[in-house]
Image (cartoon, helix red, strand yellow):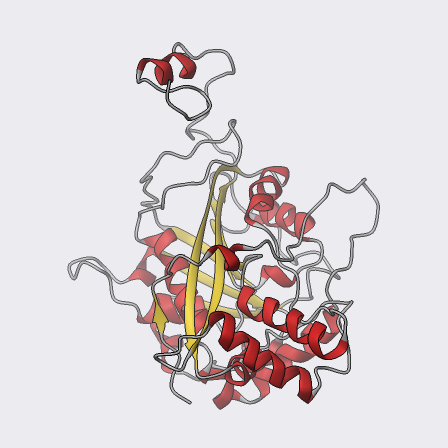
Length: 378
């Protein structure tokens, strides 16, 4: 198997832009139990089993390492990407710098400490700049999978960090975060929170453990991730068995993320999306890598017995027909990454003007330029 290669995202034909299953969020009444979407026990076993084979597990860290690198850029390289507006009462200035030192940082859902490795080994873009890890004093990597968390504890990068602590915590779906309020000056999370059932509650807890005027920066898999595999498996199921089952876990939609952050009390919200396309020799290599990552299907409504040989072979043919690159002989797999940034309230932060205080009408501006409020021409 050739190593997977990252390539730029290319526009997909209209056929590939079909809406696929996403995970919507609704506001729950206080005191009601959280909706259970994922099997937490099965997901824990998947991650533990994947990490128990350290050599195979390290070979599939290419995606987590890439996302961890992009996440750290948002914290430490002082350049926040253009925001997607999520609500008129929240505004984050474009190209806003985060130029500060962070005494204590929490990496929540650290997996195999990919963020710690990125901070320790990544060289600054400008040679004269100090190493990235000097921007923080203490890093706490917390995860609820002890085997995965401790997998790389003996590697050299651990000694390069000023202070690095690994902490095994209970699954946030079962117990609250074991940290005191106001413990951290920043909280990071890379590719872990998409498996949380009660994400609104966890975001509120994260806001509590942060100090005032501190950032929460996270990356999760978004609803359009692996759309190629979803569609081909659905068609293969329909062709071979006359029905459709859930083979890929549901994921949050980018339109939900801003509302979830706002409900948790975060301000100055920024949400952006990044598509990473990775090429594989075939669907079997793709699914083998997902299993080695511990990212297998864990939906409660999944089919426990797995896929049959006839469905897998049909899926391979359909996937290649719809999405394959005939010239290269490879197949693309799209991972949609949703990046989110939210700040806890604090003194000196930019605040929006009150409603009705604007001095210029957007309608007048558009009409003066020969357009109209509907986006067309006069």
